[in-house]
Every structure is written in structure tokens, then in C-alpha cells.
Image (tube, rainbow, N blue to C red):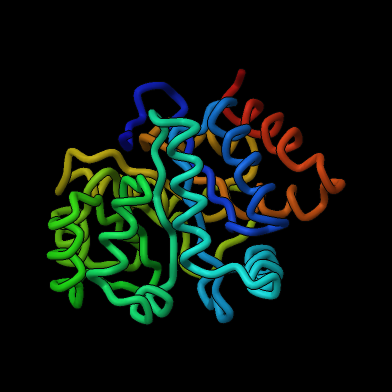
Length: 254
């Protein structure tokens, strides 16, 4: 198990765990991996996902409404790891569910579940001392978000404390599909590359194969989230895994 982008394009696929069901998320994750996703971001549903746009908010609300909790996502992570041992898996969560569980308990459980790393959307690097210590103790990769508005000093700290890859936000704002990748993304990746040899993945708004191709001109990977979550929302029940597999295969140019 590892976070690697050995083939181009590097693809990271975000899924809201439990939407439309935990069983379906398992099938969808395997379909995404088998069709070109090197890393799965397994989103922990949260009742107040402020950083997310309406598509992921709706998915999170549906999963929360079905009773999906952090423990369920950890169990699902273990199932995906057992089925696809070579794939990269990142647990993607807001800080609140992790704090409720307790940082030491969460990091130990994340490691036991087979996760490679963790991305906490509202964990800022300046306040991450305890978190980073627990992540190191459990040999987990902390992934931080880097924004175009961040000063170089902050980007340097993010780059130094990230493992696996750095997640570059293509624009300021909430998640969601967009028509084109802004020039801010390329400039941000260039700035990050001054401070790290880690791969840089670009996310927020990537929804088409041409977006992925554009990002591959200057970054190591593309993160696709809202477009896939919306595809799941719009698919016929039982057809979600096939639809996502076909979509990811198209993004990967297969």
C-alpha cells in the first residue's frame, strides 16, 4: 500500500463514504481503482461540511442520514485495502469526528484499517503539532491543503510537513465543478515545487478529461471529487460502480 503516481495521468478520486450506501461505495471504489485511480480519498460524512459545494454537501447529508459514522468508514477502508492491496487510500475528514474519537485512537484505527494517510480539511499546519506526532507514530501520511492565497512561508510549512503528496487547491472557495482550470493553479504548483520534491495533486473543479490533461502539464496528479459524486447521485440504483468506472477510464484516457 502506498501513495504513488507512477503512471500519467495521476488520478485521485474522492468518494463520500456511504452514499448511496457503504456497500455501493466499496464497489465504486474498486471500479475507480480498476479503471485508473491510483488513490482513493474516502470522505467521512459530516453534518456541516462548510468547505464543500452543494453536490458533496448533499452526499454527506444523505450518508449522515443513513447513520454512517467514522467507525463505518474505517471498516470500509479495511475492506477496500484487503481487495486492492496496492492502491493508495486517504481518509478525508473534517476535524470534528476525529476529535470526538480522540487523535491517538483515530490514528491507530486509521493505520489498522490500512489507510496510507489522512487529510483533515480544517486542520491547519500551524496548529498540527499533536496531530503530526500521532501521524508519525502510526506511520501515516498527513496531507495538507495549499491555497493560492497562502504566503510562501505557509506553503513552505505545508510542504515540509506533508507526506505522500501535497493537495493544491485550484481556486479559493468551495468544491464544485467548473469550466476551466484557473491560472492560479499552475502558479501555486510552481510555488510549492520550490519547497518539496513530493508530488503535487491539483483539485477543486476538475470534471473533464481536458481538465486532467491541462493539469498534467504542470502537476503530478488531478483530484476529481464533485463530478464523481454528482455522477453517483444521478445514476440509477445499482449502476453507480459501472458509471464511475467508465468515467474514470475516460479521465485516464484509456
